[in-house]
Image (cartoon, rainbow over all chains, first blue to last red; front, side, top):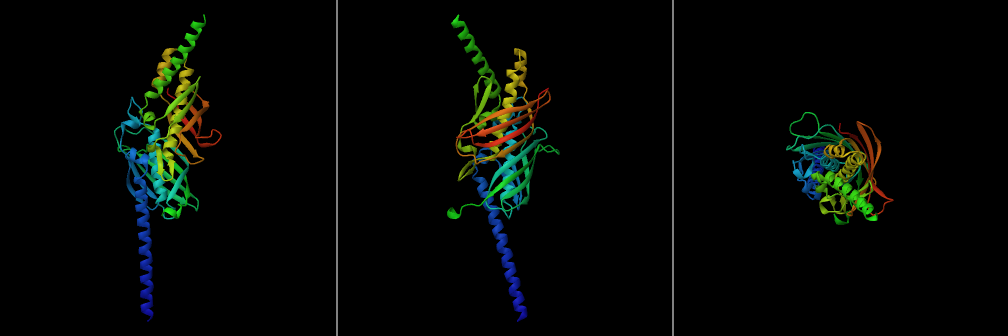
Length: 167
Length: 160
C-alpha cells in the first residue's frame, strides 16, 4: 500500500517535471518563432544559432549595405549595436522567469575594435539577473578571426506581461 | 550690388549642402537606415522616416531598440564630423575632415518611451570636444518635441 503511494508520488513528480520541460521547450520555440517575425532582424538576415534558458547566440552575416567606413569596408557600429540588442533581448525572453515580451530600457555598448570586413559577427548574451519587472543582461560580439571581442554590451530590459486576449 | 550679395548667399548655402552631402552619402549604413539630415545654418537635425524594416516588434508595432541606438549613434558621429568641417577653415582641411571619421568608444542609450511607427528626429549636442576625445549627447523625439523617446551619451575617438 505504502509502496504504491510512493510510486504514485514519483509518477506525479515525473509528470510535473515533464510538463515543466515541455513548457520551457514551447517557450523557447515561441522565442525562436517570435524572432523570425522581427522585421529588422529578417532584413539584416540575422540567425539564432543557439537559445536556452537565459542564454542566446545570434549571428549577422557581412552585408555591404551595413558598411560604416567605405575605405576599409568595416560595418557600422550601429549594425553591431542592433545585433547586440537583439541577442540580449533573445537571452532575456528565453529566461524561465520572464514573460514573452521585453523592451530595451538601457543599453550600453563598448566598441573594442573594428570587425574584420567580410566576416560573420556572432553575439553571445547571458541574462544574469531577473526581477518581477526588470532583466539584466550582458552580451559580447566577436568576428571569426578574433580572440579579442569586437564589442561588449550591458542591457536592462523592462518586462511586459503580454495581453492574454490574443493568446 | 544686391545681386552679387544674393549670389554670394546662395553660393554659401550650396557649398554647405554639398559638404553635408559628401559627408553623408559616403556611408552606406545611413542609406540602409533611410536617414536624412536637415540643415539650418550649421545646425543639423537627423530624420529617420518610418519604414517597416525598422520594427523590432511587429505587433504592437514598435521600433527596434537596435535601430534606435544606431540612429542616435549616427546622429552623434555626423554631428562631430560636421562640426569639424564647419570649423575646419581652409578647403584642404575640409577635404581632410570629410575623409576621416571619428570612432565610437562607448555609447549609452536610454529608452524613455516606446518607439512608435512614426518618423523620428534627433539632435546632437557636443558636450566636450578635445583634440583626442569628444563627448556627445543626443536627444530623439517623434511627434512631440517636448517628449523625448530616447537619448544617448557617447564617447568618441577623434581622428588624428
